[in-house]
Amino acid sequence: MEEQVKNKVKSVFGKNADKYVTSDIHAKGDDLPLLAEWLHPEKTWTILDIATGGGHVSRVLAPRVGTVVSTDLTEAMLENTAKHLQKDFDNILYVVADAEALPFLADSFDAAVCRIAPHHFPHPEKFIQETARVLKPGGKLILIDNVAPEDAELGIFMNTTEKLRDDSHARCLSKREWRKLLEANALEEIQSLDRKKTFKYPTWVRRTADSEEQIERVTRHLLEADGAAKDYFKIAVQNGEIQTFEIDEWMVMYQK
Image (cartoon, rainbow, N blue to C red; front, side):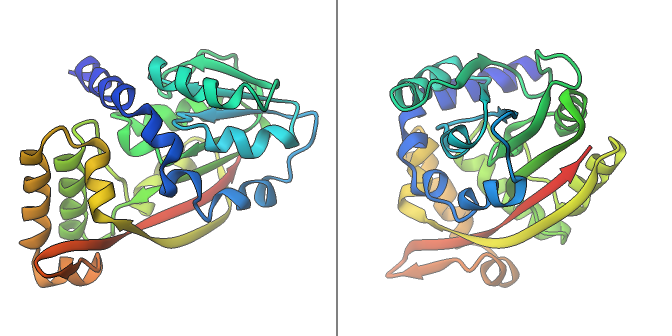
């Protein structure tokens, strides 16, 4: 079952690799300029970019450190990202790697970043355990991801929406769940930031959907939302068409 889930991730991201390089949400997020500001990286550092996707974290941090090790489960995604980055950077290494079983020795990295990816991981506890293992003592982890509301029904609605659109989606955790996992691995919270992220629905729904039928299922689910969900996620409808909606994103830094 777990292998099927990860094969689905490879399939979805392999087919859509270039979309994640150019996606505004991934390439131009307000969080990217904060990475260096929070980490204060040094030229001697080696940084691990977990589940790099379109390579946006690697692009931002490579000029500021000695080496970035850019990893992804999906080889086709990583090859596409390398094609875009290799012409500008010679200090990025590309490694096909599972975030839940990192192929690195303990105490190897000065910092690690995982951005807008953990909701695809079937076992987030293994991801945190592995990341804590490969960080040097004092090393920092920045985690950025969509998070579920603490309200259980709203959380189910959000995860159902994501799963209907993208079959490789596992689950968005709440901040409370993430903090429990992080603290269980002897990581200490340094700072965090909450923000609302607005999706332009027509672009968002087509990024991973395989068919018009699948798009229709997502659309119907959102249009039939109850008042609480419509208010919380600010589902904006004009002339019967969904224009935008909002979700919660959390950026947090922990230290080993």
